Image (cartoon, rainbow, N blue to C red; front, side, top):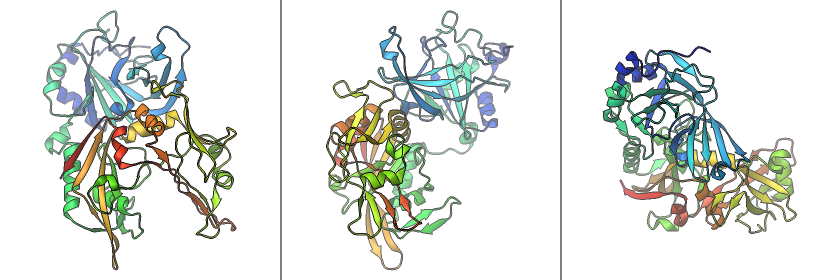
Length: 464
């Protein structure tokens, strides 16, 4: 295997400008660029620290979160870990691309910390000792630059001490991320200045509030708008105003922000609002998964008392409390209540029968990835609604909103234990006596407004 000789400390590498590297990223289809000033402990042996929790690196399009446990006694804090592989490639200042097929993120929940690993193995990149801890891998003044494209490929570049790029990067126009890594503006963005994500979001919400009541609508995948007259159109209508196409994705809705509207009878006081639905993940284990949705509803559901020929599954499921409707109990396996730490990376949230049968379960890897990716930053907007005989239901969105930032998986699990988070499903099968049986799968994790703060590290109430 012949390494690329155009290393980052070659003369051409030292003379390259940040603008030229950003242009290479731009030509590769990169839409966002981040950088991190590397510490002496950031090298191929010790791995590169990228953040304390996965929500701080949710801009990295990693794949297939998997859990594992090491039997090594050398470092107990690294015994439990979660791994996410990256489609990662190094570039040099001439535009050459060198894949790094074993690059991955590793999340160690005991610290907690997220580290970048495997970024040199089986790659043709010539690093010149700048990631070798026994050579120059502990030098200060190194910058790791990461670019992400729409195809979820990550490109990397290393700016070494004394290079033009290392001297230019901190003064280049940036977008604050409130994390260890900072985001750079691309050349195309510099030509047409735009608001940062937070300011853009607030500007849009202020515009929407100023419109008053808005007729219910929904945005289709072709970006055309259609009327929506059902009673649950508050979210669809706000998404249509923001240009968000409903797709059930686990990604944030608007430039890294999860957008949650909720109906209230009056805008103040907000604590009188009903429970908020924060996520609706499907179980990926237990009988729900292995024996199917119909079996699950027939076994643990009940015939509707109000709608003929319909089978429901509902009821409030609280941590370690038997639900009368389903006769199931919500449990958490692999989490220490006293220390609030994960003890089994393959743990799970589960609905169990009184005899211990797993009726439905959500594994930690699925929940962890879903929660930290979607709720790193969230905005909550109250809305009023009224009926219009012509246009159907109309919605008016408040100018007093709440911004919540920073979270981790332990806070998520602890909210169930404290009886803040509950599972409040609304699953059903209709026309069960016919061959056509429409199904609705909706497993809602909900929390009262008064306990929303227990899920985030910081919050701010904003009047637009």
